[in-house]
Each structure stands twice: as C-alpha cells, then as structure tokens.
Length: 150
Length: 140
Image 1 (spheres, chains in turn red, brown):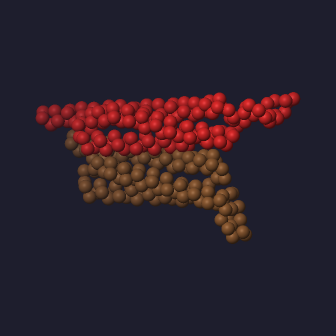
Image 2 (cartoon, helix red, strand yellow; image 1 turned 120 degrees about the vertical axis):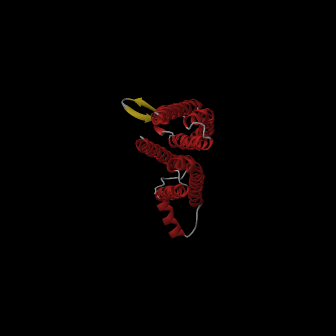
Image 3 (cartoon, each protein chain N blue to C red; image 1 turned 90 degrees about the vertical axis):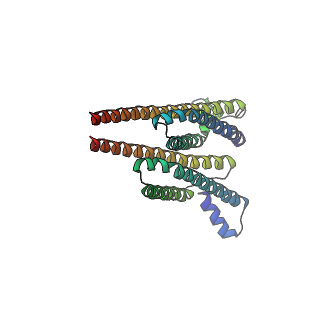
C-alpha cells in the first residue's frame, strides 16, 4: 500500500511542477507586452512588475500543488472494504492496484489544472484592470493639460 | 509524538537508532528547502520591488529604506513561521508519511508567502493611486 502511494507521489511531483512551469512561462512571456502598455513603455518597471507577478504565481500554484498532494487513504480504503450484512469487513484480494493509482493521480492533476486556470484568469483580471486604470489616468492627464493651455 | 518517543528512547538506551536518523534527516531537508525558498524569493522580491516603490515615491533614499524594511519584515515573518512549525511535525516514520508531511508544510509556507505577496502588491497599487489622485488635485 505505502509503496504504491509513494509511487503515486513520485509520478505526481514532476508532472505538477512541469505543468506549473509551462503555464507560467507561456503566461508571463505574453503578459510582458500588456505590462509595457500599462506602464506606458517604461521597460524597467514593466519587467520588474512582471517578475513580481510571476513570483506570486509560482508561490501560490506550487504551494497548492504541494499542499494538496497528500492522498486521502480512505480513498484507497474504499476498495478494501465491502459491505457484509451491514458491517464493513476488510477483505483480502484486489486492492491497491494500478487502477487506483491512475485514478487518484488524474483527480489530483485535474484539480491542480483547474486551480492553475483560476490563477491565470486572476492574473488576467489584474492585468486588464491595470490597463483600464492606466488608460483612465492618461486621459485625465491629457484633459488637465488641455485645461491648462486654455 | 514520534519525536517525543524517540527522544525518550535515546535517553534510556543511550543510542541513536535508524529511525531517529531518518527523522533528523527529514527535519534537515525541511529546514534546507524552507531556507532556500526564503532566500530565493526574498532576493527576487527585493531586487524587483525596488522599481515599483521607486515609481511610487520618486525618492531613491526613501525607496531603499522602505525596501530594506520590507525585506526585514519578510524574513522575520518567514523565519518565525518556519521555527514554530518545526515542532509541529506529525509522525514521520515511513517514507510516504514523511513525503506527505514535508510537502504539506512547504506548500503551506509557499501559499502564505504568495498571499502576503499579492496583498503587498495590492497595497502598493492603492497607495500609488491615492498619490496620483492627490497630485491631480494639486495640479487642478
């Protein structure tokens, strides 16, 4: 039992970390342009803000990946116990096979993928909000300049 | 629990078993990973947050001060949390239990840091917005 659970962990960890890194690489390569637009072309602050967001993204998603790694043993026990006359009796036999391993692994990775998607949408929300605010600020500045000229 | 029982066994039998060495190894791994995360993230935030604060305050000396203060506070929070959680390890007898405990602890550290980090960014964002509003009021 323990051996199979450790095998599941060994399969889970690299996939989870790789998935997080791939998602973060794709997202933050493309968000750089948006950041440049928000900070009106100032390279330094756009790059550093992008980096800050990347760090936060990594922390939250890798943290969730590690936090939710623990396999609930009752999930495995479900296959062990059968109902016999209203009583739960543990039985020998077909338990802890590869089937449960793959099922558990896929449920964990699916949960991680959903959380990564939510994180990406959260970051996109922040980016679009920043874009709107910076556009408003620029418009206000233009208006003030026009008022001063008059 | 396990740690306590092994401690008692060391005192009575005066020898270190394989189990004790394994537990110490787990603690060592935990401390090393936690220290690495703390240092890497702290360094990254310290170097990248500089421009964000500089953009907010437009004053280099003040920016450096605020940045260093933030780094100090970050280290204090982190080291305090790590030090308090070392004593709250559950049973780490077997490999699977040890891996679970380690990943759980490190995951919690990362999540707390991430939440604090986004909180910090949002606070800085609101500060800069307030400052812009005041500047606009002064200009008009």
